[in-house]
Image 1 (cartoon, helix red, strand yellow):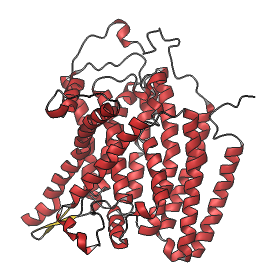
Image 2 (tube, one colour):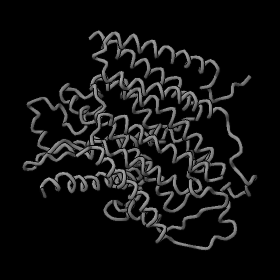
Image 3 (spheres, each protein chain N blue to C red):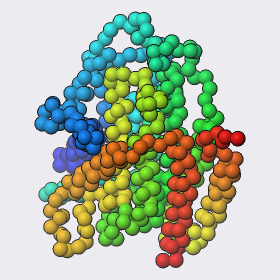
Image 4 (cartoon, one colour):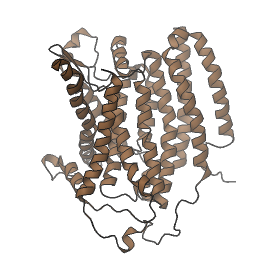
Length: 343
Length: 123
């Protein structure tokens, strides 16, 4: 009795707490990494005083923001103004429920799974849940009763919605091969196929990655918060902890996006060439480490892209989504379906 | 146990984590009397021109969002189609081609009526 209680309730609850805190921990790592790497790209040093190489900088920043004054100015719709930061962060954490952070590990007789829950429609749920943040953005911009946030929110919504479609279409091309929307099945099918889908479907991956960079409002697509014209976009009027919420949510969404890229296109927790016998010693390293290494690569790619490309103009951004990526991804699906029906 | 039960637990944990942190910080944060211009809306230091900022915005945002809804609803139909595609084979391909052709027809209409255009053409 007590054994099944531990297996059914206590271990899952510990898992839930770890998986829930995982994006926030990655946010801290990312804040530090981004400031350091961008600084090095621009031939500066970046934060290097607090702790070893400035590693404690994000914690200090967080404490500062917690204690800062939180201004609610006149003419604000108070309910929406307070709900929107919570909604944005909440949606980005919640989506991690269905992402496998590693494979199954056997401890004695108990199979420890590195995911909180699996669902036959997991992929659709992740896409749906992460889109809830659109509401946070539009609520935040609209309730602020200020012109810059309103314009930033409108832009942001159109941007996120426009790039949602190429993401969905490029993800769709994977389902042809995995024949399942269960995230764990997708990884296992990649193991059976012997090739990661990213190498099998490079066009889908490129469309996916461009769209995901745009969806997370990252440079070169950071139009909603284009500092030179809109101050800070939809969160101009936020200060203190609520500003920190938006900041954390942006990074948590980046972690989510790179997790999706890893799980869907680069084999999740699998080591490279999982079926080659000569490389079987790579299986000794636990799956979680492989997953972490891979998402660190993609998170680094986010920063690298930011440090390299100049910003788009808004009409160029909309044109890229609607006139290039959407027709291209539609064509991609039709070609894959056509080839698949005769294969 | 049921996977959706764990999802429900995770839902509650994420909600407590994100909302609870806000409540906690509201208890410990720095408080000061709200006086004068501090509560004014930020508009580069200038007095706001209007009391209410929610006046009007470009119709193009609205048009693009409308086109988005059509695409997104259609995507939902594509997902189950892709899952069972190997059983449908050519039948599935032809049927979905007809479905997509209708969508592409609407897409071309939106393109031609300049709903996807964000820049006013210089005439």
